[in-house]
Amino acid sequence: MTTDALWIKICGLSTPETVDAAIDAGADALGFVFAAGSPRTVTADQAKELVERVPEGIDAVGVFRDQEIDEIVGVASAVGLTTLQLHGDETPSDFARARDAGFFTIRAVAAQDYLRETPEQRAAYDHDLLLLDAAEPGAGKLVDPSTITGRVDEAWILAGGLTPANVRAAVQLLDPDGVDVSSGVESSRGVKDPARIRAFVEAVRSIA
Image (cartoon, rainbow, N blue to C red; front, side):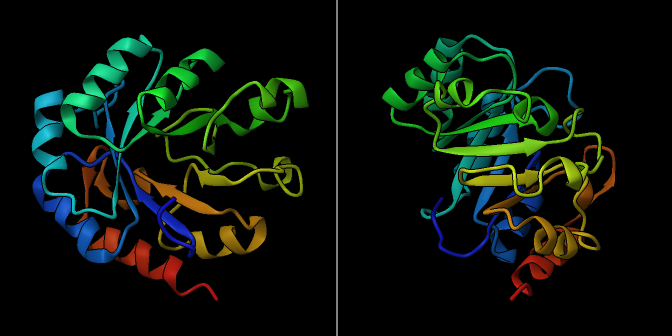
């Protein structure tokens, strides 16, 4: 994290216009999806051009899912990412490899899966930050608040189904350390809306 305030990540960016909109709105982190099968997936070449627009002090996050860790580190280094968000079946040793390569790490996991883990299983992951998502990432579905409330004992980000209209209530209820939005700031699936990006950031920053 790069700020003491509630951390805001706008994820799934794929155009210069929306990258600039997220920066101008005051986001703390910008997410670029490298996982296959998403309407938001970018190539390494596309991502490199977009990351070059990101000023120092804003995290450039690569979102990967079930990819080989050496491939992930290689792509991240070539693109100029600061942070790796691993969103699949990566092992604790994969996270250690990412951190040894100099990257800040985010462990992304469905809330229901995380809450099934034992304390020992959780402790095995040497990540910097936890992201709790809905069961189907990127589908715009909210996490069931009753599954999380009072049950997370580390720094964490709330993701899944957040929008400019509901993020304030979700944060006040669950008290995360940060929020992550993708589909909630889109005009259609995979297409980011600069006005919605601004509205989302404004809604979060309005929380006392």
